[in-house]
Image 1 (tube, rainbow, N blue to C red):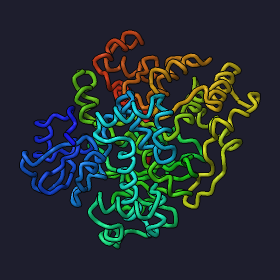
Image 2: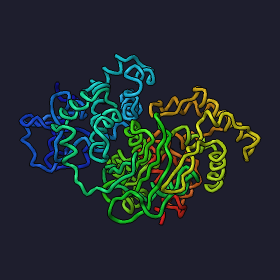
Image 3: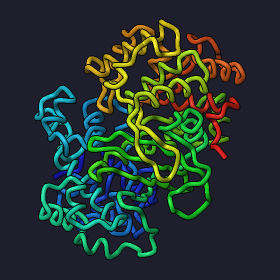
Image 4: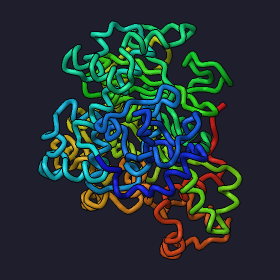
Length: 504
């Protein structure tokens, strides 16, 4: 198998020789003499350039017969930023594979969700990533298996099926092939001083590319938290040492069951504590948490682009590495966006909390105050509009949205085509540009979504000396593309609103 043609060999060699962690996840280095593949920042002495070859995915390395390095653990690299900044077929397919669709529905299910034939999907993934959907899903299963082996006391048979393998034999063979160690050998290498966990609970570290500013990220999630579904705890329950910062916690609706996640910022990772009713949901839960915290972003590329504007440069230099706070459930966020139209943050939380209490699925939380899953569109489609404490026109907006989400007329998911989703949302009654773009930014993940009519953005623009009318500000923001959603975070940060500060 040849190195993917879109990888620039000269740039890849320089990144490996300088051990540049920024490129971890962008590509992988395979060493021809040792048959090992590494992340660019691997701490070992770099091989000679003539012994290096480069692949755009771990799956492609594995298909070519290379095994994962035991020092740098390339399977734990942050994901490629490409899949979060693009909306083409390959990017949408990669988001679906990360969400476990191939394991649950097979390649035909993946293709059906994308609206293409299986042959087209396989051809495009192979051309760009050097591996087809089955190989990419297999690599992901291997990574999930390693996580479970190293972070849980589960029997190997339980781990095999939780990670998505069809048999113990396949599990054993894949782990040995990918990591050059048997499952029991992997577990034997795990430090024994790890804190004990309750059944079904796992403590993980979610990597990211530095820098990461947690203030607006966790501040936004905490300030807008819906009681019963989300909360901020002053001290993290993750069991990881270090500064005792607080933790954002929330409930998760997952394909096989439900979960509760605790996420706490650390200097070099996000401490993640997951409690799952079904361990088969581990891969999906991790993927959704990473998307919510925007952990696969390339902050250096974003900030370098925004610094070219002299009005934004001081904001970036003051607090670099801002992320876009997103969501674990696109339909949930769309509903909450409607509830938040033309009301305060506190009022939006109150509206959402009433829906949760009346229509959410109850669950037990032994560690905090979480009580429900956010109600599904199907549950909300049965709500009596007269019970909603909002103007009649907004009731119409709410009921139309949830009915279309429930019957499948409108679908919002990781595979959504951003332009098509925008058009469908704009066709709904009561949906204007602000609502559509905030959903595009925080639910669909469009890094270029922009909110020129937002009052906070216009106020920040006036204070900075930027144009403040929507048309003029949009014209000025052309220079910020394709990162206008990140510019929104920096502009919002000029205000004293709680969304901009890490809670204490």
